[in-house]
Image: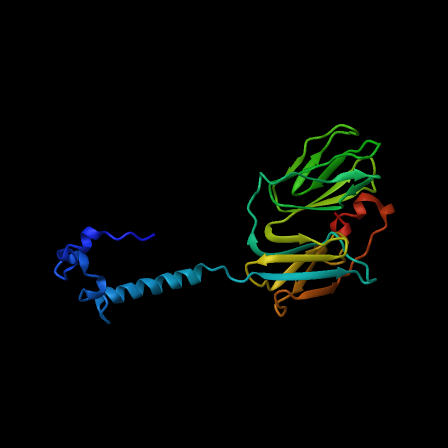
Length: 255
């Protein structure tokens, strides 16, 4: 409810043009006149705010989706896809991830981590295992163990660590420590999506331990692909025979 002050209404002096408090800005020379300094400054401030808001708005993020298969049409799972745009900082507080041991196999075979992240190695088998790595980025060896837990291993350096079991030569796994923020693993259908990219990459780098290419990497030119486009790719993947053991499953098969 609006209440009128009758004392003011009865006092004509308060409403007289000579009283400064009764004169609106619209009646003050120089305030609203076109071209006046105060009006120009006000317009400049509005324009500056509008420009600042425009630049503060987030740009549209790029997105790429890939469908990976081998030459026989089988889905390629656990392939690492990187857009090397922004370096990943060390994340010592990243959650611990696991590589389990089930039916005398490492599960998953490939674990993607960031620098500083820890990996645990639970043993879900009813036999003992002894996990180790001689890789350049990380050398370690767990005790021989079955039911007990062992301390997780921290991976600080970007690169690929190949893991084996000192008891079962056919067991092999890989810890991929990515140096880049925009990295993902292909799923069971061979699909992988890179979302929220700050810009459209020119090249994607794809790694898989069974890729028949130098250092098991494949470079994909995506400079002509548009954001949101689905890319279907056939990779030269060969599944090695497990009977050759751990050494044959190292990247390149020669290390």
